[in-house]
Length: 355
Image 1 (cartoon, rainbow, N blue to C red):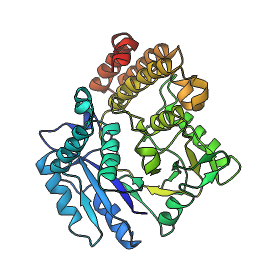
Image 2: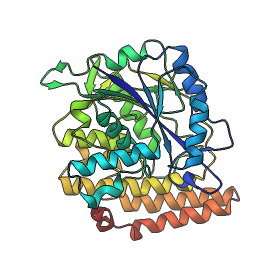
Image 3: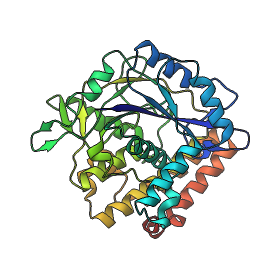
């Protein structure tokens, strides 16, 4: 059964402000984290093809990634603009709707993840292991990633699973690198509480409601049926779990599937991530209503941010952020957090439903 590893790698150039979309894209003139990840994969002799997905699509970014990749003797392949055109041609041949062809792109987290799945389908891979370009694995990771895949577990077959990510000290949690918590917006805390519930649940594998996109394993039987949502701004991993569950495929948390997450220090504004999260959760709330999904069935993390009082939480947290940065004498953050508050009214559920 051919398997592959998928790694998106995010970059920016003086002409491409990708920091407005992605958390910490590497400026093209800087070292970044990709080389460290590939060095780690070489040290553990990773046996399967490794597919890199440079984002956004630009010749200079593609060239930069190729320069890094050629230093290693691994089976590294790069999804280029030509590959994307080929994938679109394949989709046209099977009748993919032209109205949605613009979603076959590298313009969002979900769209990039989908490009990985489409690449795997076109090239005949049966299982994809997904990590990020700021992570490292140990010698057991490859075995653990494939363990139990496509096996029957209770009433279901394991077609998709996730695991925890660790920081340098060995803690299994998500680090949003936030130096403060916004009032009514405890995003990192609630997510980590949800992860802790999965870790402490009995058994090696448990059905889950959240996932780490940088530590996911998908079977072809799942990813040929269930895509990532290309319209969301963030949280494409958690959303994928919802999508899979909606069509009858439970997602599983593997307690032994862990890797090391070593993100670069964030250098973008706090308001940008908050704004993306606002749009993300308003979109998710609208999606839940359309699909008739009870927020409480999505776990405590997503439930908190998709209830009817979301607009109040947006305004309250935005004002709290603005007040915090007044004290920090940061005018830009102050102004942009106030603009975030306006999204409670200007980014309507109708806008999200149209998406």
